[in-house]
Image (cartoon, rainbow, N blue to C red; front, side, top):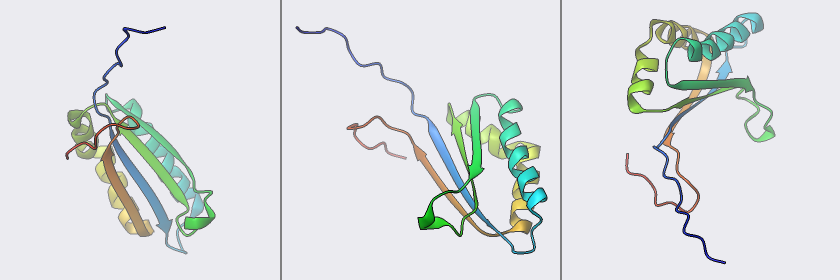
Length: 117
C-alpha cells in the first residue's frame, strides 16, 4: 500500500526551559507561590502554555523546581517576557535563587534538519 498523505508541517514552537536552585533561606511557601504565579501567566498571555513542577532527577537534584514555557510564536514569547507579572516574577527569582538555568530552543520534529535561530 502506498499513501499520498504528506506530513503536516507545524510552525516552530519556541520552548523556554527554566530550572531553579533556591537560597537555603528561601521560604518554601514563597517559592511554591512564585511557581504558581509563573504557571498563571498562561491565563494572561495569549499563545503560551506553562508547565511547572518539582525536579525529580537525581542527576540535577540541586535544581529543585522547573518550568517549561511553550510559545506558539516569537510574538507570544516576547509578550510573555514583557508582561508586568513576568517581570515581577523574574525579579523575585533573582532575589530567591542561587542558580537559574535557562534554555531556549525551537522545537523540531524527529529527523528534521536543525532550525537556524
